[in-house]
Length: 69
Image 1: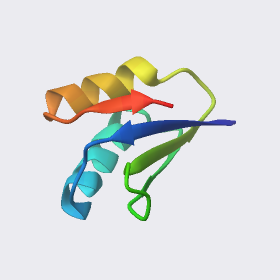
Image 2: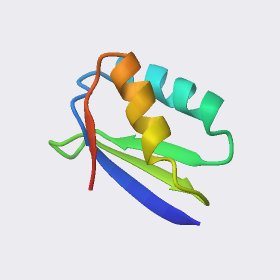
Image 3: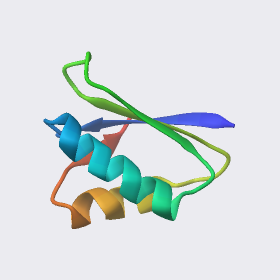
């Protein structure tokens, strides 16, 4: 497994929880968490495959921004 990290504009834990649920629905074989202690609100996903396009799609559809680090 490898870890993908994304800088996001998610501001609340409620929004983060929603995004985690949606991401886990479409990428069921991964471990997802948000780091709210970091100013850039980093999303980390541990996975076995390339999921960048899926992550971008979910964020865009929900009106959020993310950029792979």
